[in-house]
Image (cartoon, rainbow, N blue to C red):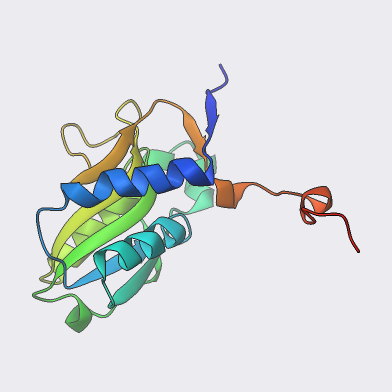
Length: 168
């Protein structure tokens, strides 16, 4: 059974970001953006929240384990992650585009917490139907969905969409 897809426009991304802003009840010392999906929403939130200290985390789940049918049991591989002294004692907003299964963002959250940081999680879309973590959910989210979300930065416009006006 094919999963329903939803194409999100740039205007909708703006509305989602605007919906998130009033939800924040805490001040953050910095942000941890999960690559690649969190880069654009994280950047937009940094501007709106005036967060200047931005860190990145890159996480992978080994493909060979996925092929063996144990995909959900795989331990995360942290390809890039901030040093513990950048996390310790700090209130950090962890940002990704979507919480599907929740594996990536909870792995980052756990590692920030184990380093002595105070993480809170934030996504544009939360999919409770795919969530593997029971009652655990993002601290902040703009929308709930059951669809596979395609963001505007994931769409290849192709060469026919590059020029908006006729060449002179």
